[in-house]
Image (cartoon, rainbow, N blue to C red; front, side):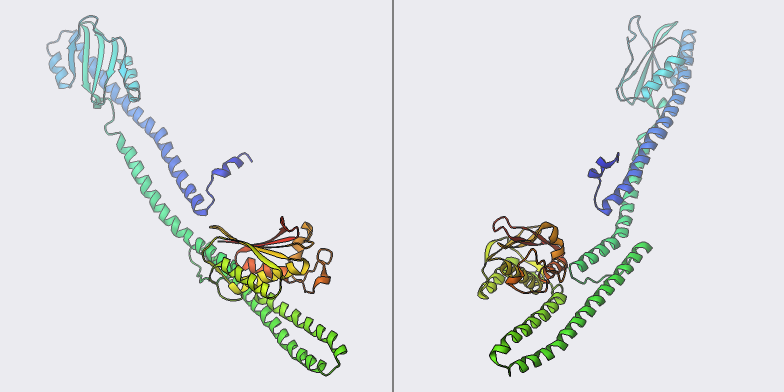
Length: 433
């Protein structure tokens, strides 16, 4: 729970998280090497070189103090410049650049090993000037900076940076190849959830292949189950149409008063069969194609108006094609309109198309459905007698379930609510683009 605030800043995708797992150890390793090993290494090298140079400076100072004529020749051989200073010319303080951390070690060693140390000047990476108070007077000793500092210290950092970037790029390429099969599996699963069949062949690591084969087996079982259900109900419908036809022929021989109620029962049975067939075929009816949803909904409303339904298209915004099964969407919207005019006096339809989603809304002025019963209302063969007036029409409770299946087959959802304008039921088919 302490790290819950950190989740907001973490990447959401598997690729981003895997890349983070890859980059963090490399960066932390380089930081540890730079801070611990590099610091101690260069500090130790600088200290050793400063100690050696301090001994050479002490030797030259001792020669100058003894008045040896060979002192100048000895300093030249050691590549040390010696210059006598007047009294009072010694600097009052040490001088170095603020970021010259190795200069601190040089100053410390010089102060410890050189007798009469008075100060040091480290103006750049080329020269070092050391001031001492000797028995022969103030002296200035100059020598090359490379004698007390490791040469080319940046090479280690450059090599670390270069090889770190190179290995990271190689790891990224390998990581991308490992994540590609997972992305293909996700696309295939998403397409199947939207009712599309995308060719997929398991590749990649053993675990990814196992997940891919499990997905293929699941998809095959679901397709076989849907096919068997469709064939079963189609066969039942086909077998029942023959006796229904014989019943119609037999009823035609009866008197008008006796024939009318019986023919009404036969028509009701026919509608039930049609509803069963619509339920099993609507979600996968037709092929996915690019359709203008605004034009499709407008034509559905016009067809409903010609059929005598009091329905109006009140809003239609957005434009552009959307991959849809037009027959399935038509049947779902028609079922929503039929339910709306069956339990209400009028219906209003609106469609809104944005860059992210498609929303088709059907509202009525009927009694609506209570919030606690809406989930149950979307189940097959469910009729809410207490919420809907069944005296206004007949049905088998498949209207909302068909719309739900169609929305899910397109990767969307059916949402039920209360109409703000009419006060009845509001049904929204929302499909992500």
